[in-house]
Image 1 (cartoon, rainbow, N blue to C red):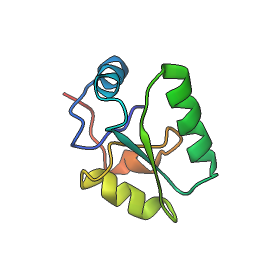
Image 2: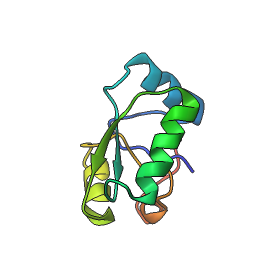
Image 3: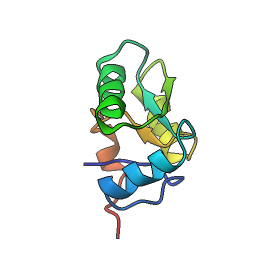
Length: 91
């Protein structure tokens, strides 16, 4: 599942990658802290996809999810499933 905030109105992974590549370094990803498994997963994701995103480390998942929903970050780390209760499928 690809989870993005309202500031990133895409409906597929391909559209997400296209939008991120169009504006290198402008988009962000949130993790529950520097050196966390989410941080490493996100860094690997950007490396494998050839994208450039800025890391926003939080002191836990709760504030990161709040900021994602509030549009202050583009995407959470790929490992987060906590958003699933608050997310709806793209239509």
